[in-house]
Structures are given as structure tokens and as C-alpha cells.
Length: 231
Ligand SMILES: Nc1ncnc2c1ncn2[C@@H]1O[C@H](COP(=O)(O)OP(=O)(O)OP(=O)(O)O)[C@@H](O)[C@H]1O
Image (cartoon, rainbow, N blue to C red; front, side, top):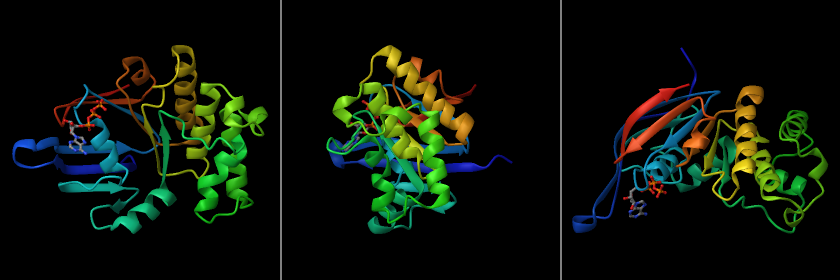
């Protein structure tokens, strides 16, 4: 049996009540295999972000279960969820979210150090070298974000997400701020992180081009899985 990075059963999420009630997710059963690149697609309002937020412990489901890295998230309070995200998940956002006064290397290490880990741990140091090498940013490590292109900044953000070898890296429209050539590069790097570093990546995108880089494409419509295609 394939290892699962995450799964959901009967996952529902509703917002508001009465006249403003919105069923963002209507019973999603999903298994996300480890070591694969999964894209979540669907029209605007179909529930992509809600699904990702529930999987990442950023939003509480209305009902149903979410299991990530073998842990059922439903029972966890906010503090436990924060620790879980910090210790087991990585995030890449559309807006890069790098700190402007820090160098690339300092940005990459920041979440690890905030989590109280020492960058001299041999496994971490080795992973850093491997990630920086895979992403082709070795020569940019002393640069600050303003001295880098958008694509380079996003590669630094990806390195930051990968350096602790999290159970899952969640990428939310990671190419939304990039031109098509740079997008292709960034997507190719995400795919390499899956192929060469064994990373599990889950990406929300509305771009068909972006989904072509994924191993599995899940299409949501109206809060439900409309189709699932494996490459
Ligand atoms: N905090 C919230 N309060 C109320 N309604 C919400 C909230 N978040 C999402 N929704 C609603 O839930 C539905 C699903 O939203 P969601 O953001 O998950 O869709 P999406 O597929 O990510 O859309 P987009 O591609 O536009 O980002 C939408 O109808 C949205 O308006």
C-alpha cells in the first residue's frame, strides 16, 4: 500500500448561517499519497483554498476527519495546531513572503530557528545544501530579496519550506505573481523536489499549465471532488 501523506473523510466546511450559509466543502473523501506532486484545481469559489486550509490545520472543518502525517487534526486545539504546522508542514505563497532585511540564507533558516532547532544539526545542514543545490540558489544566499528576481525569490521561499523535510509542502498559487517562463522554472523546481528529495507537495492553482507539472490533479466543483486524474 502507498504511504499516505494526508487523508480526509466526509470533510465538510460551511461558513455563515441562515441566508448567508455557504457550503464550501460538501463531503470530501481524499487520499493524498506521499512523495507525489498533487494539484488541486477548480473554478473560483469551488473550495480549493478551504480544502487546503483544512488539510493544513489553518481552518477547522465543520464535520468529518482530516489526518495528516498520521495525526488526526480534529482533536487539536489552536496551540497544538500551530506546533503541528511548525513541525510537520511547509508553506509557499503567491506573494513569496520573504523578510526584506534578511538575506536569502537567513530567510531560509528563519522558521527552523523559530522552531528552536539548530542549523548545525547534521541532518538539517545536509538538507540545506541539498535543497539549495536542487533549487540552483547557492550563489544567491547572501542576497536580500530586493536584489533577486521574482523567480529567485520564490525559489528561496520554496527552499525555506523544504529545509526541514516537512511531511507536506502546501503551495497556494505559487506562480500567481510570476511570468510564464519563470512560472515554468518554479514548477519544475517543485517537481524536482518531489522526484529528487522525495518531498510531498500539494499545490492549489487555477492554471491548467501549472497543473501539468503535477502527478495527480484533483478537480473540485461546488465543494466536491468532480474528478481525479493521475499522470
Ligand atoms: N471566511 C469565509 N467566510 C464566508 N465564506 C467563505 C469564507 N471563505 C470561503 N468562503 C466561501 O466558500 C466558498 C469556497 O471558497 P474558497 O476560497 O475555498 O474557493 P476557491 O476555489 O479557493 O476560490 P478562488 O479560486 O477564487 O480562490 C466560496 O463560496 C467562498 O465565498
